[in-house]
Image (cartoon, rainbow, N blue to C red; front, side):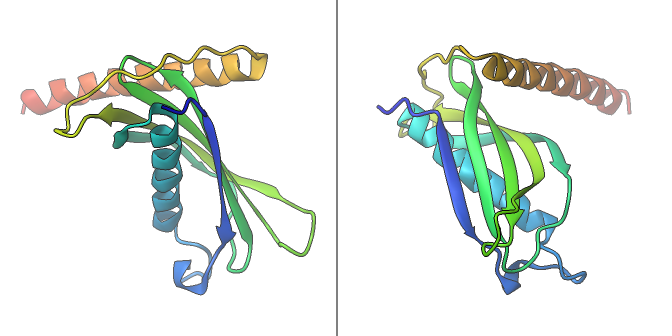
Length: 159
């Protein structure tokens, strides 16, 4: 089992990735987030992983065709079977040294065995201040999502 907690995806945005406005489609970026998150979670846990949620998505600026896109994914919080992966997206002209942040999100994965049952993973503990801040961000996002889910469940059962 590898305990590498970070991975970078790097590639060029292609013409097939754009929407009618000529920018990379948000759904394509979300697909990339899920793929980078999966690779990070599988690498960290050494297991097949399934997506539980993608949250706290922020699109800061558009990605253009031909730009070099980098998704930096890293484990920022772990549960017994779950991994919270923070993904930062950057893009820029590959001929220049001007890379800009274009978005970020938190993706949660659960490690599974061959039958699809959740399995334990190594615990990750932050050591650097930046890692502690990202873990706190992930925990707050988790509690916020749980609170909203409870309110939605209550509203749906009252209908």
